[in-house]
Image (cartoon, rainbow, N blue to C red; front, side, top):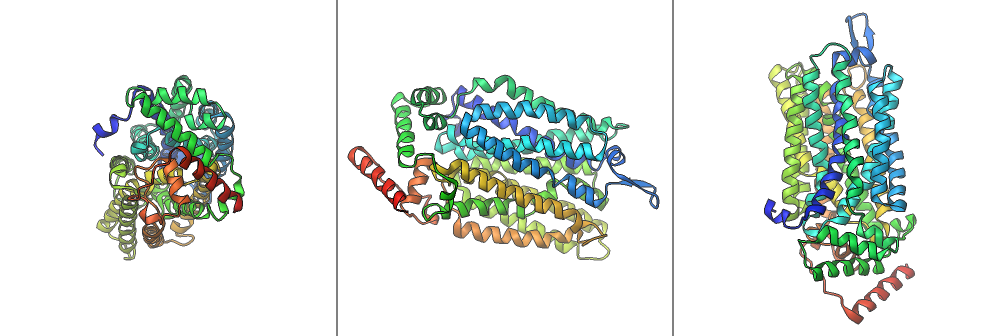
Length: 505
């Protein structure tokens, strides 16, 4: 989809709304990459590591490295649950406002940390904020944009994380030469910037029209939708979209219970979103994003700070390409292409690490494969996971489904992040780059799963996706399947029919 084709769907209000919530994701990239990069800094290692009398150097032990990069997902899970509750009960904007206030507190704890316990607590607490973001940002984005650009906009979730990574890695590169703790405290100080921006602007954007309808506030929903569409759609088209929202919520009122995720009509969708969240993390993105700088430093070939900037730029560029293409060629092709690139890079990296000893040229090639892996992740599973898991759930179960898929994502991320130091360290498994064989095999499974099970909802409204599942359309035919229009008495009969089917189940 061309830039011109994308921009015609945006008026000033919608552009501001999408940009603002995307900007909030920069802080996720700040946290993710700031900790990943500062762990390789001499001052950080001296402050939070242990002194080895044999080598005469400070080093962060594997057990603490594992805890620092995995226990934060406890905070992530808690934040997801809290954010999901606030978003569903009090609105998307209030959730965004609350998490930004909270982020200022955790930023202070992070910057002032002096001990291992403090920095570990700071990271866990800051990830409560990150979890709240995941619970509300993709949902809000998917609810306020027209169907033709939903893939592009929701995909900016990962794009913004990548841009945040570029900014923070560039700052880390500049501060890495500074003496003392200011080398790592300056990057952490950026954690204040984004929440302050969000706090000052969040009440200027409209609330989600879908959420307002769910709260039985139709007049406010109409006003909100007009603000988001005025100038890009006629009044008749806006009225039709509002009517479509009301029909969708009448067919599938968003008041479902958690157990309905696993009943006969919704089980397929639930399993798909869980599997997508599983594969996003199980293919090893944490190896590159969380431990990339430390691993590259151990190879002794490339400056780890330069490498972090390069990989962030490559991954972010791939995300941008994915966002531009996802509404044009569909999600499935990009998922498969991205996982394929990841698999090739991981197997190549593993094969290069089999040699003993690994030569300098082989080590350089291993580092290059990590960059290629990042390109594959950015093209497919990085941005598109958030698109698909917000498209597929039943309208009655969107918050529940988002919560389950995100908790799966967090759980697998925790398992992978916790395990990697033990897989790499010579005192334990000592696999080094041969971990590529493990993650590469999972990437192949991701390709097969996508081909067989993942529907392509390109160009479909959320209400149309709901009907496609209700009518039993095979997932591989979603993209080209044309739904018959509903109107008048036929529409009423369809609503009654689906309600009676749901009650029978």
